[in-house]
Image (cartoon, rainbow, N blue to C red; front, side, top):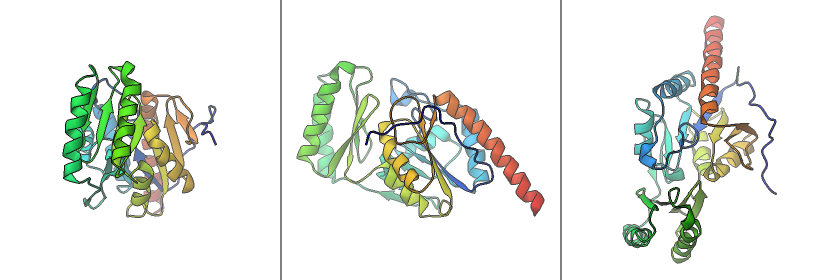
Length: 262
């Protein structure tokens, strides 16, 4: 069935509930840039994330295609639980790191081969993520079909890998790894367990996260246009930032109410 977002849907109030928050980064918390290293998150947004995490007893995680180390740099000084490289590496709330690594010989072989090929296509970029590769063509859209064909050839040769299309990028990552699995793993651990999951993302890579959250009767939010399995929508990154402000006010109000009842 073709996934569809209800264009008229508005986000429900999260007042009074126990929620676990999961955020994609590029295109969700940060505007997409032509170069991955140019992305940043405003200090006010980072502060809101820290406060939301505190008020949720730490039940806030980042779920991104970026490595965890990059996520830490983008949201500093917050150090939240995080799933990087679509879940190929995941740091739980206790600080333990879980990794799904590819054999070193495969990584080395592919890095050389992919770099040699992309060197022939001006404007394309190879991003090496330690246990995955991202083939960017945002600055060279004419090479989209060539990039996709290259990725398909790689996963045919190496069944340990699967390809994940995104916005002007195709990623090669370990088989069986996705954001839905990462969210599900978090939800089985403290402080996430027993809460209602809320997942906010913008890309094709977030769709399995939406499906996982929907299956748990949670709240899935698509940022931007396009068909999706998400049940709700925010129009752009600026709207996400505004929603974070409103969410923080709700959580602060709920927290004051709890303190008063005690």
